[in-house]
Length: 73
Image (cartoon, rainbow, N blue to C red; front, side, top):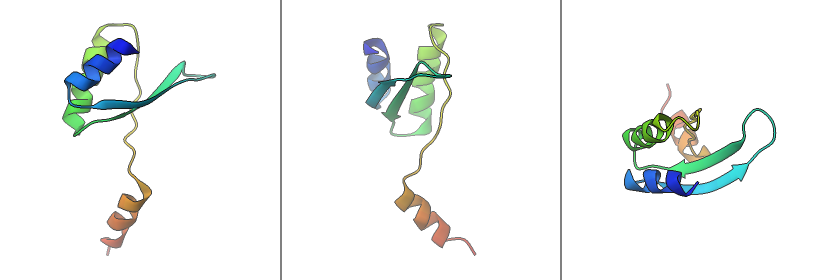
């Protein structure tokens, strides 16, 4: 976890939460990055170490989604 934190911070992001889980995944990390490129750099660096595989979900706050929905015809 500490090494991943360093990688994420070096790319301008921050790890907000880290949870150990039961089931298909061993853990879940919630991170915030300034943009998708920053997130991808972190994921590439962490994944290239070979110790983890990642599945990424982009989360959009409900308020932001509601604003986007208002722009639909």
